[in-house]
Length: 345
Image (cartoon, rainbow, N blue to C red):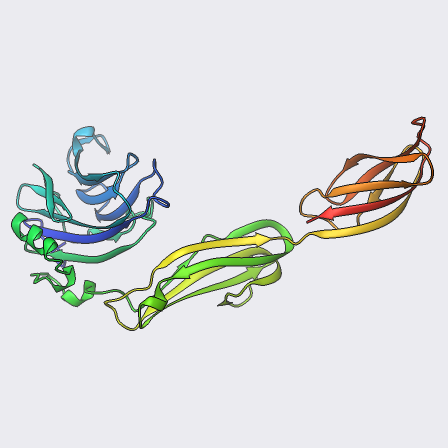
């Protein structure tokens, strides 16, 4: 990667936010990956044991088409990190890779990846978009000249922003010096499974009110068939008829040294209760009575037999109908008239 980094020496600095509510134990969350297909690679990720690990993979240590176990070299920068922001620095010389967390050197590997022209740098996921980092990443900086351990610690202790460091980089330093002016983040589509009429609410809390020049807007759209959608519109609590539901957060800033954050985001879909009253004639042996609509879940049905010393029994019920029998005080199945109350959603 001579346009960004050199295999002889280089440094990657990055800040990431640990949030144990979304970084689930047992999963892998990649913070960055550099490499190609079947080549050397350098990556930094949270592994399934909640260790934050630098991985160097060396090309050539193969068994057939696969790397053998000796191809993988690991350096742990931290374990079971508490919630909050952290700064990781990974740098290398012509033979060794070093790792730092919050300014402190955590160790080294007697290996370094040969990063060549055409290799891909992926931030927040692997190159195939797997193992995504479900969280915040900022202040990525690539340098041709690695800092010394003393300088890294001094910069971190002094609170020096990565964006303000003097860096002999192979590209315009402003490229990663701040945040993007805007970004759109689309949630996974919600499929209810059938067309319903429901109340949609959202708990959406952002810090943009505390950070001038930033904004965070929640938008939504709906569809009944998965093909034709309503236009995206700013969200307010609404009752809609739909099957598919999409949400997205649109973040923006007029000052690229600042960024809005979404601190809480919960979507609720609540189907309102329906309360029906019916009167039906029940034949001896029982009759099936349709509600006149289909409920989302099987409703509560309360039958009352009309007449002295009679009672009604619910034999079975579905989301659209109920089977009723009417019996006398001797439990003879005689039929009759019933009043029905059906309540559900």
